[in-house]
Length: 298
Image (cartoon, rainbow, N blue to C red; front, side, top):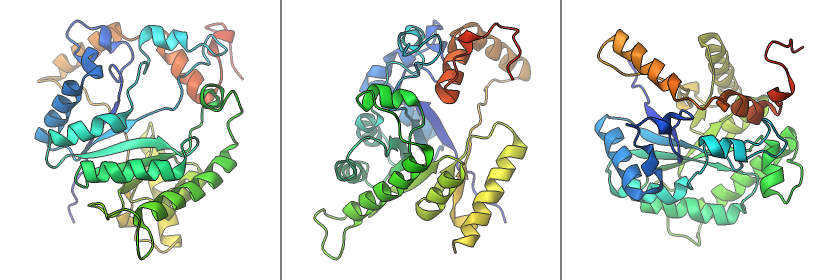
């Protein structure tokens, strides 16, 4: 049976998704700090029949590479710095569209869950039922340094244990019991997405989410993640087809293959040269600057 493809725009609320691309003379993402920029992006996405705009977000800036605590380096190249709160943008984007959905990444590690529930409930009203919450637990030690008063980020297991209770509080606050303190929003409960493919992440997704976001860089890894998610859904009594799988792709659009290759080369010319080290350091917590370029790493 044929199934519809779920097509989302994956983006950060910052200048350009590809680090350094903002420096191209024709790049328009310098307007990222205006409502008009995001409204126009939303109109284009809706006109192109996209399902949603999916906002990735980090609570802290990557600061490992050439560090420690070197957030000024990514700032100098516009590596997802500066960044606007996507929750502020979504109401205006919804006003400019009629069918486009919005997925917003919010972490369970910092904000009070009842206050966040009020924000999410408010956004569901403001968008007329077109908002979703991408549930993450944060992973970068920079979150502790920058947002937890210099404290240490809780362990992986502890973050997911806390996330389970956090999501439960948010859901109960919005849905309520027989008599809720808040009027029912258009979706009753905003669409829930979970990002992460650790065993704890998959369980959190199966327990709560309607879609799971995976970031697999090859088909074999994607297939393995999808199979394990669907097997887990069956194990816990859910129809595996009810759990939608979202993954990433980076198409380069042009009239011909030759034109696309030229566009790729042009993009590469504007990539911030420290971007690979910044990204790797932020996600692995390893500062590659401590190694020589040709030094074996065991």
